[in-house]
Length: 108
Length: 112
Image 1 (tube, rainbow over the protein chains, first blue to last red):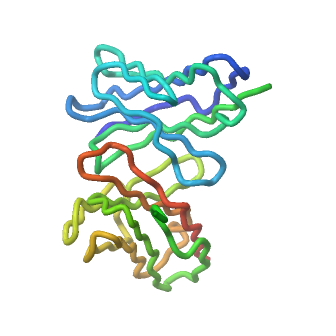
Image 2: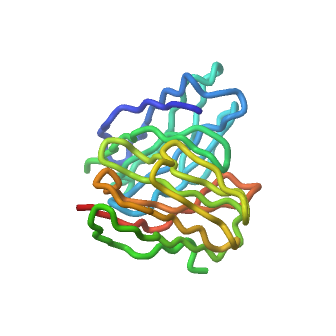
Image 3: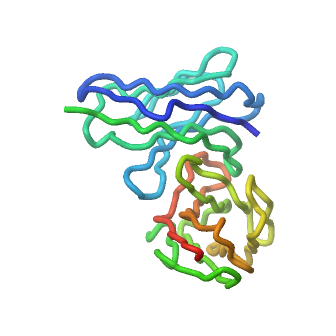
């Protein structure tokens, strides 16, 4: 199973890009990289996933290194509502292993 | 659609008591999972199911039982609660061919 490591906290200025790193050096070749976020105590919310290629959707971009040992989630223009705990995870679409999360605080 | 629903929202148990955390989804999702969330530990997978009648263990299955008799429901049973099971429990579901898991609002369980 993939083990992931994330910094416990990060700050970002409103309107700037937030770049959240994740280390997943034990991820296997067929396991996907996932990102979810959790606002307050709500249930986690899916953001994006990828296997090898970089991915972009309406919420964020995911950059995966060529060796797949790490990835970066990019929120291009962070807003105050993006303040949350961001979880990086790895696995299949029915069995995920999450890291301990990064608390992103977006400051005005 | 109600999405993923969990009951109860809060529960306090005494050590040794048993209870069932309920999870239901109305999206016809094949896959369902249970996670627990503890401070500083992130989300850890307890059990998962890829369809009715099929369940398997996740990362932290000890002390928990599950069954999946219908597509819609995936209850989590604590047979003899222990203080170490004090946690927030989240249920999630997704389509077999999709990668986005939908999470419920959680059940906050305290075992004294």
